[in-house]
Image: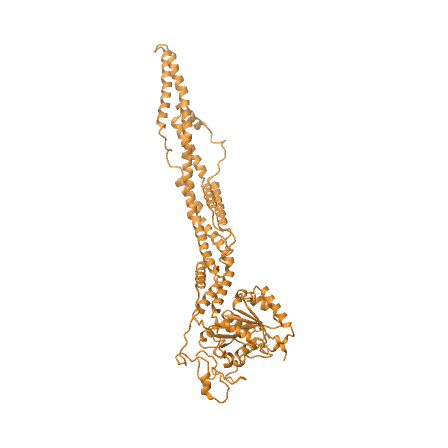
Length: 618
């Protein structure tokens, strides 16, 4: 036999697939032939102990398989104690569940599938025994994993040989009762369940261990690889078996070891077939294997630090097997593998989701951006122009109320005689509406881009979509608001000094009229000649009228400016309120939702990935 084929272990139907006859270990498959012995609920194959002629009674006494439900068992039923999820792990699982729930409206189901799988598997594992540890033996073709499986069990349970593939389906071996639900979860049928030899664990070192021999990871049969990968996702720990020829295989490192680098604490890496290496070659290969594992990002459990346990052994000669058995026994006795596996799966799922929740920049919408958006909307509805128009209207009303009658008559005449042509061209209403709509759309795009800056892609898209939805009908709403909030109908309000100014202006006009009539009476001889008094009256009225008008105009500037500013303020506030209700509030709601999911994400990674380092934002 070629030395490289001594550990044959892939997938082509071992002895368990050949019916209920005895194989070369003297084992009878009672699951396929019920008449040969009692039926067993979990399908574990009962083994007869070939120690003389003890008979069927002795075989039944030493049988370690579990009876069907309801059958009595010596020592009474063993209670199933589920693994206890500690506070941090339970909090992280709750946070992941909340995170998935909050994200369903923003992320597709495929993106959240891995997180959902972790939650489902954590729940499923929580219901099963915490006193058992399920360990899979995985490796490439010819690595000798089935040979190692048999060596640990103390009896040939998995077929080995030169024919490839050899192991067609996973085979389970349980060192103690109560593991049937765990094996059911792996989908291993009853005919592929075994028990170790009695002498394989005489001191009970491996009690609680459920060992699973997987099909080869590089099998030519796709269904075999799929079975191996499916079980790898469910077991509590993995023993990776490599040989001196293929320990650096790129498929093993890139497809399996590197993606599972975060699972180092539940990994054993075994260099098998060291009996083929002369002298110090085994140590050299082992050192090179450690180097490759370090490049894969796998922490090594050296110097008391948590990490993968790297060992060298020969399943054929037994050299180093005791060391692996002791390491497995200590690992199983700790009863912590299920918790470590769930934590590692949680870390891996959180790392895959990191681009969807983590950002290195501060996120949110600043007050400056909000104010700029409101200012853009106010400009779109013409708040400044409305204020200026209100100011001019106030001044015009003041001039009409306090101006001289002759000047108002002259202005009226000019307005009547001035032609309609020759003025500056005025933009049509349609042009103004198109310009206002463009300004509103530009303002919405700008504020959406600023709000989405620094957000992960799905949440940035959600923010932009919220802004676009709010912008629908916004120009029309602003137009209606401008018409309702613009200048009030009628004349602007008058200050208290206006009646006095009007009375003074009327007095100046009366003085002019009296002086003129007096002079006219003197001219026609009705009144005695006296030019001084009537001239003085007329001059006082002629000079006093414009002086009163100019004084009123100066005094009206302040109130007119305040009136215009008040009109502009009302329109700006109305435009800002409309923009806030339609655009800013929906955008703020999306930002708040993102902050909520980011807080849950920080809780998810907080206990396992560094308290949210690099999540960023505020």
